[in-house]
Image (cartoon, rainbow, N blue to C red; front, side, top):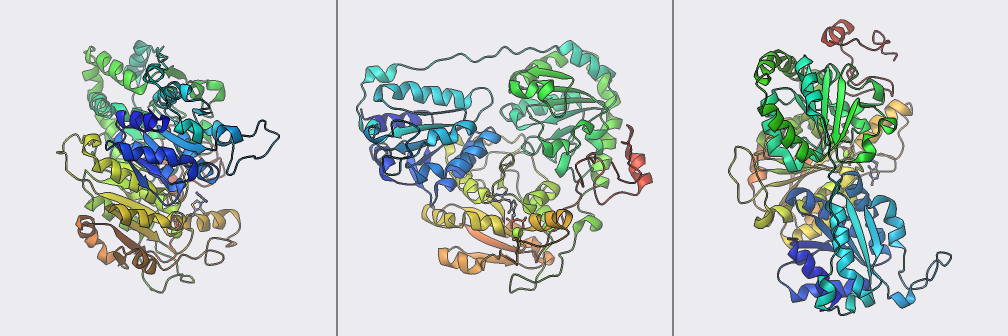
Length: 621
Ligand SMILES: Cc1ncc(C[n+]2csc(CCOP(=O)(O)OP(=O)(O)O)c2C)c(N)n1
Ligand SMILES: [Mg+2]
């Protein structure tokens, strides 16, 4: 069997249905291998970066891993951003690159290049992959493939890259070679002392859970655990579809995105149990040591490097190495064996009510936070005005529990985190750790392929029946749209049914907000100076995709009809030059509970159960 066929068949055997590819001579044999199987197909994207983003979207929605395929040189180089995405957001993806024939490979690192489009892609991506290697002989292929996939999925998942020279792709391998395999047993030396945790829980008056994306595989059992504990659960930025807004124990979003509730819940807890999270700075805020400072803090995570108190920006008191899945099972069993948990639960209602009250009272939606689009030199020809906050809340009201929502970056993702209220069953994905502009359109394409494939439709909403099809909704800024605009053609070519909502403020909104705070408002390179978006109506026309404009807050009730319509749609949400993202945390020293616009000081103080930090009277922390 040809090596190229072996690889493609192997991926099909792993349940992968689509490989996102751009052609090139160096991956020609791998592409040709698809002609000899009907178990797996390639999807031609217009740019390798988008192919990598699509593979990420596919992995996040299918629960399987994603695969992207590129040629040597520039093809592989275009993978750098999606590989970074997968590394920082712990996404299992296999990146395959073709490489020039082994005979033309440069013999040492002093030589820049010998073969046409030769590049040391392995060297380039080493720091942002779990494993990357060039396979120089056909005999190594089965072993390296198994090893790469094993490392990709085991422990904290992440991307791997295999670089395969043309002559290796063309070579034959025997069945005997192919059966030899890589095998390693997972390091599951998990240990924790549940008696200690239980003792602290019984003592605690204000316990809280912090739930990270590492809990995704155990999400159903996690919801049972939350229901047993009956304490507030706060999702991190990658877990807002694990603990959803409709969960009775949902505490709200935290950190930078802690809009509703203004972080009073997490900051006032006296016991914090964080599971499957690396505690990004977006969660803790810049004054990291002030995060949940009144609490004894437990961290349960699979990444040993993140469990070292000396390396932790915000040191945790107890750090346990464990798979979230395993911990959740053990903790649930443990609690079920304890009669006293029911007594504890009785006392928790008051604390839960307090957290809910903060969340409702300090919603981002009351008029004073809703913001009004500023007047300014208009980048568009329409004089229209939609509040992104109002739009996002309305979108979430009109979305169904089976929808898949893919967010981008910039001001629009801040608004999405502030105002989109999730429903159990929804998938809400973006790339948070790397946050590249233009992720969401390509990510949505991958998400669509994943949901469209019945076998891997892992829809498992707790209380909703499995729908045949799920709406895929892409939310993107005008700036982000420009970064992968060419993928509109992939959408057309494959009939991808995705609704693209462009939050069109004609500028890089988050950049304008940043410059106002940090550069005395000098407006550089975000628009209209330097940057200006195209007329998206004309763009959609050029790609032959229907286009709708929402120009007024009063028209937001049409969202549901747009979602129910057939086929792809570009929806231009006209927001003038909106760039007010509030509430927000101002300054590196401010603890996350003191968000701007500042509450009157007596009101702020009345919400603090623990002591405010010195400086709270004047905000001079
Ligand atoms: C690839 C890439 N380049 C630059 C940035 C820096 N950046 C973050 S958000 C942003 C502006 C985004 O503008 P837009 O998509 O219109 O969103 P808005 O903030 O207006 O909602 C920029 C330049 C980035 N995140 N990714
Ligand atoms: Mg914008």
